[in-house]
Amino acid sequence: MFHFSCVLDAMTKHLAVEWGPSGVRVNAVAPGPVSGTEGFRRLGGSGAEAAGAFQSIPLQRAGNKTEIAHCTLFLASRASSYMTGAILVADGGAWLTSSNDVSALLGIASSKSAKL
Image (cartoon, rainbow, N blue to C red; front, side):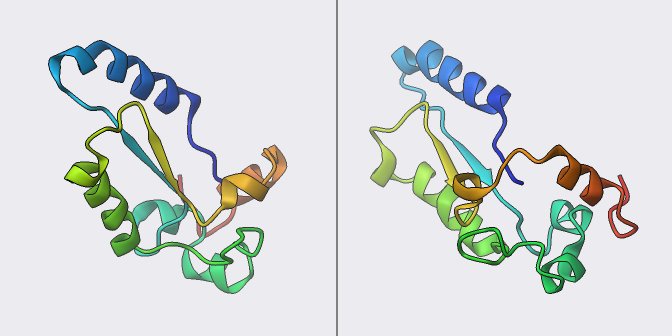
C-alpha cells in the first residue's frame, strides 16, 4: 500500500554519485503513514486506522512525527557519516508485505474522508 518512489530512489542515488566527490552526502527518508500529517488525513486519518486499514502493516499502526524525526536526525548525524545514496524506509514494514494493489489505492483516493 505504501511504496517509496522509483524517482526518489533514482534521484537519491544519482545525486549521491554526482555530489559525493564534493563531500556532499545525499540520503532520503521514505515514510509510511504518519499520524497528524496531511498525508495521513488524505489516507483516511484516524477513521481509517480505527477501521483496520493499517493491519497489513507488520507493526499494525501508523508512525508518528517523532519517529520520522529520529530517522532524519540519524541521517543528519555523524552516526551516518559514511552513508550516501541510501533511502531509509520508515513505514512499519509496509513495503515488505503490501502488494501494489491499484484497486485498494483507488478506494482510498475515492473515500469521502480523502479529498485530493
